Structure formats: C-alpha cells, structure tokens
Length: 107
Image (cartoon, rainbow, N blue to C red; front, side, top):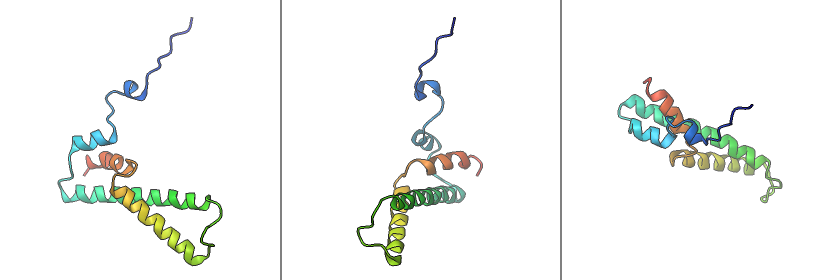
C-alpha cells in the first residue's frame, strides 16, 4: 500500500511564510538611517542583477538594427542600466524586498 500523496500548492504547503509584499508591510517602512541605507542597498543590488539580465538578453537578441559598433554597445549598456535602475526603484521583481526582510532584523 502506498501513502496518498498531497497535492498542496505553495500557499497551502507553507501557510506561515509571507510573501515579499506582506512581509514588507509587516515590518513597515524603514525608520532608522541604517534601515533606509539597507533598503537602498538592496534596491541597488537588484538593479545590478536586472542590468546583468538585460545585457545578456541583448547579446542573444540577434542582429543589431543600428549596425553595431563600440558607441552603440556603450549606449545599449547604459540603456540596460537605466532600465534596471528604474525597474528596481519601482518595485522590481521582489528581490530587494526579500533581501531587506532578511537583513533588516539584524540592523
């Protein structure tokens, strides 16, 4: 006889584990200068990670419609950096929130 397998989704399997948004609301906004710096550092880290992803995506995109060249590559890298920075400041993928949640309790 085999034991029945459970088909729980992530929410049922880990009911006490809050998601990033709920956890951020639970801790509230950063109050101390250290917490504010920590949140900004987490957002900066997420921006760096997103920038790396965007740059890798550009390399696999195929032919360059602008013809390539060193100046074009520099412009594309700067564009990827700005997109990543804006996305991270707007909430990003939740990596910054998760990092902040893990580290804010130690600050």
